[in-house]
Amino acid sequence: MFLKFKSKKKKKKKKKEKPVAQTLINFPSERFEANGDVLTLRLATVSDIPGLVAIQEAVYNGYAPWVARDFYHELTQEEDRLYLVAVKRDQVIGFIALVRREQVPDLHIANLAVLPVWQGRQVGSYMINTAKAVAWEIGLPMLSLEARRSNTGALALYDRLGFRVQDVIEKYYVDNKEDAISMVQDLEA
Image (tube, rainbow, N blue to C red; front, side, top):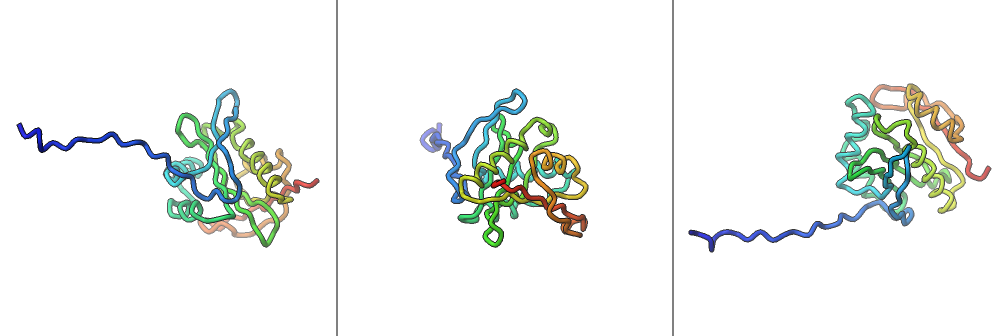
């Protein structure tokens, strides 16, 4: 009875979401190995934003320095940004945010985070090495970043990967007025 009133549900084709903020460079997805696990590094999309916020909350004990609207704003910028995510079986486990700065000819690592259970497994190193390759490809002679003074694990990683301390920026972080360690790596050396 009433069958003629039942709506027929059409199977929706899953639309592949287009990545955004990709005008800095055409970045094809690539697979890489991190301590025996095969991961994918690809362009971030707007649908990745909840995962990016969750990663920050995991890294910063429940606090996300960048909230969803910050990521959305960044991901929808044109020309000077590149956001990449490291993925294992459709779960975002890490990300890197790259910004080409004009006033200082460098590629700035604006944000980098890896889920704590994946830290120490070469995911962050791979993303930073990818940033070096991107900078080199687009003709930028330097990488730069800031890290919290208390983030000794990240500072040690950056040191191992060839970054050097350029400056200490007092009370840089708005949330707790923590100092930032500004670091650079000259890619022409």
